[in-house]
Image (cartoon, rainbow over all chains, first blue to last red; front, side, top):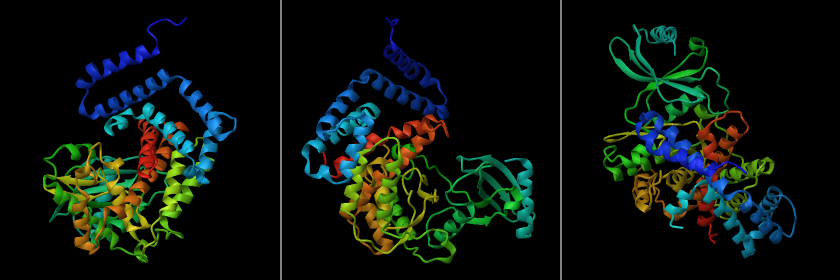
Amino acid sequence: MRIQPDGINLLDTVTVLLRDEVLPSVPAGQQYALRMALNAIGIARRQLVNGSQAEQQEQALLAELLAESGSHVQLSRLLAARIREGKAKDSAPLRDLLWQLTLQRVRESAPRYLKQEGF
Amino acid sequence: MQAEEHKAIADWLGVKTGKPVQISNVRALSGGAIQENWAADIDLGDEVIAAVIRCDAPSSVSDSLSRQQEFALLKAAFANGVTVPGPLWLGDPAVLGRDFFIMRRAGGTAAGHKLVRDLSLAKDRPALTRQLGRELASIHAIKPPRDDLDFLPLPEVHPACEFINNARSFLDQYHSAFPALEWGLNWLQENMPEQEPLCLVHRDFRTGNYMVDESGLTAVLDWEFTGWSQPLEDLGWLCARCWRFGQQGDEYAVGGIGHRDDLFAGYQEVSGRKLTAEQVYYWEVFAHLRWAMIAIKQGERHLSAAEPSLELALTAHIVPELELHILRMTGLEG
């Protein structure tokens, strides 16, 4: 068994340290770099929390709707091809899936957008 | 830039102008991997010019515009009344061993985040927004063919069509799939407006790429993506949600600083053309797709280890919110 605190706990602790103690005393010219670092830690943390579960669920959904098997990448490519062929326009389940897949990417990469837009 | 380089430029300018030229106060301004910008005071004996020397970086390898081409664009824009730093002299590459030109130095700041929040800059925001409209109309009044701008390729098909084709070819060979962008590209294809005559389009005209001081606009910068295209492409880019620096609401639709009505009013003053938000909407969707494609490519520069950079890495993570916004703008919402 891994020793506690785990990776997520460490990232949280680093975030608090950088944001509350380091950031206020960093010269203005370097604050942008530190903010970028905090943003990157946030993305990494959210991916770590989600693990591979979200991707596995997506893969299962993709396989079911497209009636094909394959890796997440292969199935995403197939979805992209079907959309380019115009198949999603007449398929509510495909459009729904596209929305859910995209929403999930935003949750990990830019949850701020969802907050701003009132989701 | 080394002291002997200042001297070399001063000597060259001395011969060129027939005046006793001295260069002082040389200091680095923002720049990039492709070019360097140096502030300098150029004393011509009877006049001291606040100038910027813009030159290729020593290891420049780039397919963007050359300094010579950029100088030609600045001259064309300046002659048409666009607020650009006055172009002064195109450098002789033998002087520095690389291309350069010298232009006047505009005052103020270009920082987008600062501009949208600091209301002491360009205090009259409706006036600034109208001014941006006038600037765009003055740029768009430049039409092909132009001998001085013959380095800009003429698109062979509708410029939006050219973008869609290039985006699809890129996505076909890329390691990751982007189903939401495919949806958006289809929308662009199906809703493409009829082609209108080509004109000069800045193609990166947004908050962050123009300078302002307390009283208003001082310079339109960053001409390296300029080309012949459709005029509304520039209006869509400036109004797109992704370039509002976090500002919400219609009163900030124009680059996080103003209302579309003021932008369109300024545009009409110079061009006589009355625009509507509906006409520009297509190009706002287009802007999100174009920015998403650029963001993927910037992320890839990091991912491929060609240019490891946290900023480039995080740019790739902007793509999902652009995707979601494209879906919403094109009528797909769960």
